[in-house]
Image (cartoon, rainbow, N blue to C red):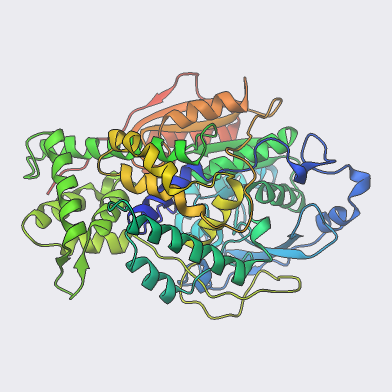
Length: 555
């Protein structure tokens, strides 16, 4: 999944943690003063917005993704020869001042493959994070959505603060890596280590303000939802047709709250729980990752693995491995080391898809024999480190940046969006007070998730609310797909999103599977339900359940 941004223990787990609990605006705030029920000013008060709605997008063949988007090759044409097109949309930097500075929002699309008479409009995607580049992600996953292209143009974008949409920059990559190597992301010494973690977060916050202070107050989910509605209008659609995954479900819920009458056909997969604050979301994920690892352990027993005779023994083995390598890292054949953070990184990343389970089994067994190479490789392959070295910009931003960077800004954007959305600012004392709950939920993942709550320490922008407001009375039905084995957005979140959206709006489909999300699993039942709603407008029966394919074979 593109949302699986794996770093080191708490940072890795905060990627997953805050993935499900990075929180958008809740009740109306000062930003919404004088606005209508849909979050916008009266039409007579917004001539500058009218001007922006009338802009024409200059669609051109897409170049290779920029380094800040993640890099790589230019997207290849689709099998039928359709070429990917890219453009930049102008949006207000501050939606309260639509006549002021603007920001460039990078877009990508593939035109519909069907007959013009069958075209329903554009289907907009957000693949999660927050912080992932939709411009880079959509071509990578396009084959999964080819059937949807028969009636829609497929469209995605870099949300503000991400990639080429004025990507947030904090510490430069080398400085970030050096600083993180000196800090234990799951402190256990009761003092110095936790202070060092706070200092690291404050250092990152100061760098974000220095390098991107002009954009930091305006990268939250509410602003991104307003950008979505501007896209809808510029693309010529009366309603927003939308496919949101993971954090993208939060963005979709916030959009529905702001613009309920403009919701078209929408699917939310890997659903965020909108009722939780940051700490509650972290605790829920501790239980979610624990459950997912126990499912892996049960499969491991069936494969007659050597990690333990039962689930409880395998969990204990993993806890022991992490603790031992946290104290004394294991040398790897390439001259590096495998430490406790990387063990958690490898395990957590492998739980995002059951297709990684066989490799995780091999890696854990190898570590018990003194060989850390496989787990180290898993941690590297499944993990990403963000960063950037941006500079402030005093004028309009055209959505591009000529400053040299050598990697994606996903982690910086993740932190910026999360901390702009969430008003929670936790202390070491808060974490220590809640730690027993986290350890009870998961001795393996609990500590890192608990300490991830300090991620917004020192953040220069006050967050909007403790959790997002997604109530959307009167909106069209929204299909919510919940996965019973999802570690990052636990299954209970779908039901809570359905209830929060309102009666006859949230419509839940259950997938009894493993990994993060459901559609990308390839499950035929899930895909048929999603296709039927988005293409034909027919929802599955209430209480519908999709069963998984058999688990992968072992070693």
